[in-house]
Length: 374
Image (tube, rainbow, N blue to C red; front, side, top):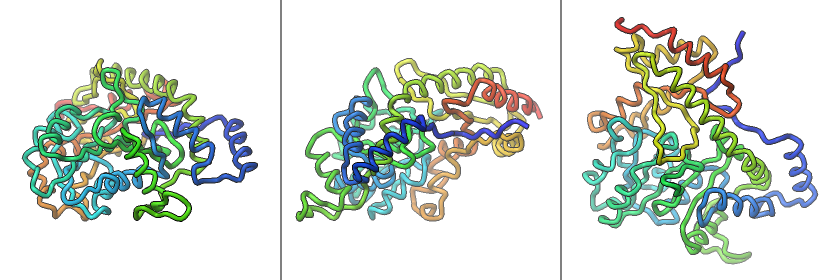
């Protein structure tokens, strides 16, 4: 019986190396509050990513909430319905109003051509998402933000190491937020980071993530406990040693998927773009029910019976969730592209130790169940 394979699988550092780090933490008794592993990881991460300032967090959701607080965002925030719930929840928890904007035709990211029509006197920010690590229309979004005096916070949960024309996507916008959850291509078990561009903003973020403490007795803002602990930081330092090799392996598997699925009717893969250095953290396919002869959901369930656990990522849309579906911007008729994508998408298994045999197993299963013309 073949092993079950899942859409992602966390990479683990060498056990002996992590044990050595644990012993160091044990001996120092520094478990959190900006210990030596934390500070080393923060500096190493900034250098690896090519960004000026990194603030580590216990998870990406708290980092998103802190980004909104750091920029003092109020009122309405334009965002995408095609994302993980943390994107919109962070807006809601900051007592702001999410305003949903449709995604690009033929793509997955927020459509900048539709953003402008959603701007109102209450709009203060745009929160786009680099879905699957595919960069948003960075220059167009910034142009709109500059015209209307809006802040731009990128949810870059999928965008670890992604570059456009050699420049990190994390250097765009006012702030960018990374997630280091165990399902991400780079993980610290749980964790995240907030990328800022000047020391004053980093200082404010660092106050906010630690209850607002500026020193032992001075609390300068109503902060939160968002700190990353020493165990997570030690794990992250070890992950940095192998992340480039992991991305390279996923790139090869992505290409093998494309080649294998190229002749399957009704299955569309996303092609690489030469100007973008992707991290290949997800491998989405689109299922055209008419051409393939089976609905996306039917294929998804069929694959599960074969021990292949993909993910309908993102389905349902955030605009369909009970908390948000009554918002004026959540009406399905206003989000036709996002609705279409959410009914077509399956993310296939992809991770560093997936192996060519498992890629071929997935490809063969999809090809064998095609029923064109049915």
